[in-house]
Length: 207
Image 1 (cartoon, rainbow, N blue to C red):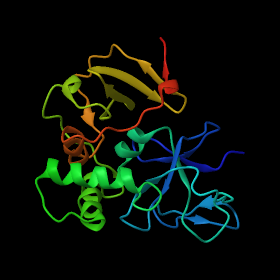
Image 2 (image 1 turned 60 degrees about the horizontal axis):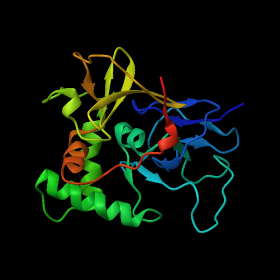
Image 3 (image 1 turned 90 degrees about the vertical axis):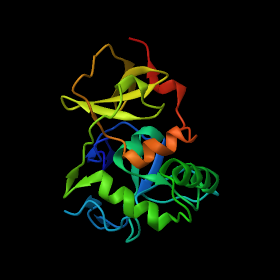
């Protein structure tokens, strides 16, 4: 049975046989004996995204009283859920994101904690995912932005919409007139300021 550790763009954590290309965590939110999630879905405001391989280290997933390993299809999915790059295993990406976040949001002296404070208000509406109104045409959003309409998630890439699934993306012709923004607005501003989310070309499927 798959463990409940795959994250959707809505930030929900579900069980699926599909594998993720990035991992990450929100603190300790599981029972290591049962290898199941607790009722809470975060124990820290530091929602981070990590590489799956780092310095040859290996972990048995959800088996110790340490951070709970979560998995994402790609970086755009992790950003939509409200995560950011880890300053330990992805330091170069984290620094690039921090600098773009500071520039895009017009703030100085940005720290991981200050970003986490802002992101925490933008990703959550109490315990539910916060959806944001679009301030511009959906297809004008920067590459890596994700929106939701009718319980479906869409990635914007090169001015086109792609329907998200755990298996990857399919090109969509949906007009998305009633779409809401999933990716936190401060992260969108970091994209506009130059941060480029990484994509796996193999995740984009022909129609």
